Image (cartoon, rainbow, N blue to C red; front, top):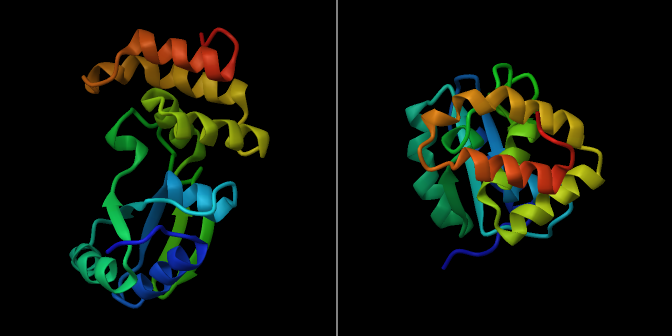
Length: 176
């Protein structure tokens, strides 16, 4: 039985994953893990990660860590769902280093917009928390949307007009 991931369980995952490789890599957290580590949520159902570079040793470690920590781990990032602006790596806040791994929150603007696009109630609350904590500036998020909007055709599951409306509704302004 897998359990909810709180900050302690996520940090233990980081420590243990850090022991699995002697090659430098970055691990990017998204969604609930970001919310928990920043502190606006106590727990999350799963820990979404992206590896750069995509090392087989890290992928192979996931099943054992899921079992030993009773943790759901998913391979997902905003780039799987919406276009992400170049330079996202540099805009991804540092969390900690464990072994040869450095852990970061995936670009918070990309996270916020992916949540706006999905539009679930928890996503909306997360975006509001990001704005209220000063992690995401609504005007900058709208500019980010304007920059990625021309590439939305590459994501057939996204309805661009509905996405634009959701951005305006949640972040204000005219988004363009």
